[in-house]
Image 1 (cartoon, rainbow, N blue to C red):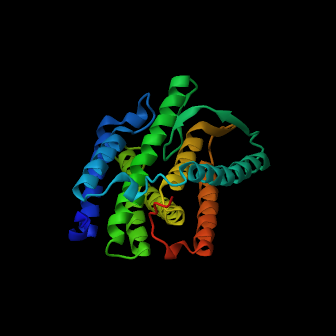
Image 2: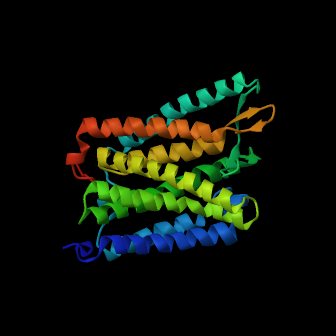
Image 3: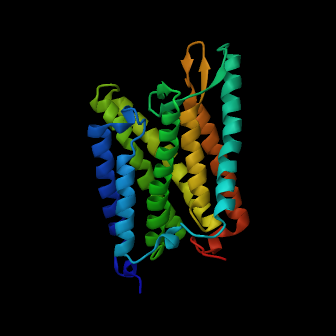
Length: 286
């Protein structure tokens, strides 16, 4: 009998979440590795993977049972990258033509930045920075998908419906992203109202995105497609930029909103048409 059958899922999930969020707050507020040459807050993600491993030992689950399955790995990664590429092709194209209409003389540039709520930071073109970006985003998706869509959904579904598990996990994922606006407020970069507004938008948009990743996990029976889509989303924002005569990525928020809205609608349609709601969330089919 799995040990998670004897725990209170909401309390245990909340406990794991608070531990991971404490590591995240420490890195964002004190270490600030995303503002260093690494351009990515990766230390709390590595610690999160460690926490995930310890939690799996405690509830006697293995990695395959939370979505790191051996089934259709390459196919699902391919579909995830294809989904991300498709919606961002439309999103980048829309932003490009919007800038042309505004006489901004837009052009595409490839360089490495770190994402910021008030615009991307930095402009690096060295091979090492591209490597940091790729590795950092891999660490990011392994931790976040493993925790939020893997462990949390598996534990919450033991005594609740998939929809309830998805909602709770996605709300936590939304609040996961308030560290950046809180830091900007503490640094005097934005006002209290600006912090609240930015935090609200981030919680809403990333919560919906988290729900999309949950649906992808349900549709495919593993984490691989959600990880690939998540990876593409983060990496393309770090690497491919639209510059104009007055700056770079000035309406990036519109680009991201278009991509994520399209992506969510596509996944939602697939979810209902595939009958995935009637299947187990994690499947180890051969």
